[in-house]
Image 1 (cartoon, rainbow, N blue to C red):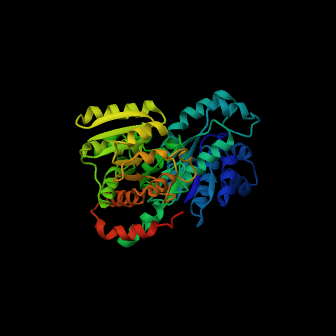
Image 2 (cartoon, rainbow, N blue to C red):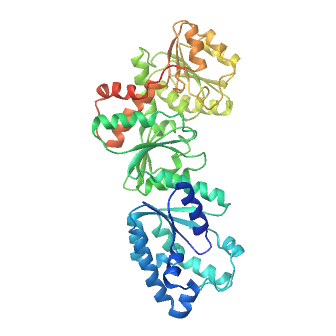
Image 3 (tube, rainbow, N blue to C red):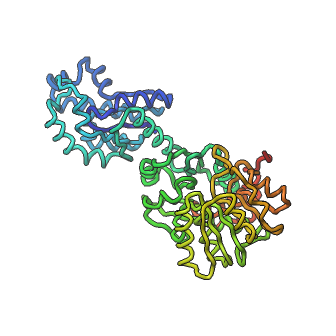
Length: 451
């Protein structure tokens, strides 16, 4: 699909479009320049000699030619290209329309009122034009990109939107960082076994950039996505519906787009429980030491309490978050004893003495993140305890290696990843799957040698 930039004159369509085309290795098309080349006159001269109606006819022909090009390009439109519905229709049929929304005051600061822009002779003209055209830009665009910072920031935001848009209609996993993820090969293997042709990719959506990404889902750029660190909680305000356990624990790992509405689910909790049961360990009657208080930890705590855990201790580097999570679960599941505290070797060792299940729900130990400075608290666990690290890359974290050295049973996050992915695929595809048959297919796709 073409990438089509729309907006007022001076909003940055040409300068930003040229830079984006270079990065994406695509041709750049400036419609005003094409019109000028065809007429042998500049835009101002066309208006002066032939009038606006003639210019709009030339513009419509240029839009037709650019939209019909067989290969993708970055297209910068003139400010008035959206005045004709046929132009908008043609561009939307073959392109992804981005409205560059730049404040009038910023445009005015950099605009030369030298007559080169025939409809603008001063700030008042610009304000009138902006008020009249804004509803048209917003209606035409697939997404709005606020262009009120530097060009580098605008380019980064535009590239993120474009990359999130591709491949249209497929699925993705979003996160920050995302280079470590095994989700794409896992879901592709499942899709392949089922004869599903949709693509699945990994998209780097930086922390704080969900507002730019979510419109892609609403516009149908993706059918759904999986959500990982750090977005599991942050995505909640952007969703239209939050179902079941996702609502209880306040964390979403799967989003399904249905007719422009976004519905959030959490398959992590059931996926982890399935993995634990496969290892001969559930939650009922267990004393759980839980490290972390983020979205993943919240899901673990809620599920463990609902499944009948006897006691749960939540430890986190930010003690306020640990206390808040413990209080929430305690209020909803009073039968489970809840304690909380700061995560340190001393507090972890004290809690480990009474625990028969330890789950690390922090990113500590993940590739590209910090590791545990001190895992000596593992020595305090009883010999029958299971140590589970939700990190799966690397397959054996420092925590798991220490547990293995003690002779303890260990489990990384790979089985949880597989089971939660199969549950997510059921939601994506809208049908029940034979998970027992698909498990070995998915597991083979993501197994890595121990490192």
